[in-house]
Length: 71
Image (cartoon, one colour):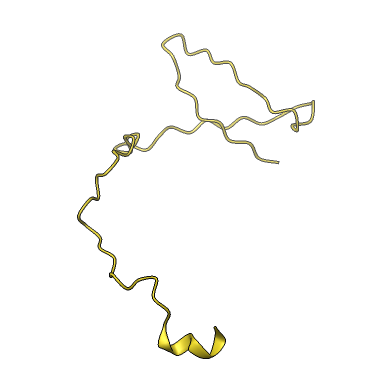
């Protein structure tokens, strides 16, 4: 079983982990990895940021001639 949690290490260098109930009681192995340099947290998406980048044909919902035998 593998469980991944992302936590920020505080200045005190002490962390408290929330262990999911499906993890069995007993010894576990913890592996600590640091975030690769240059990999920053992505900002929230801004509503409407792609406005004008896409268009839709006026007849988008019109029936296609190729499928008229199936309709």
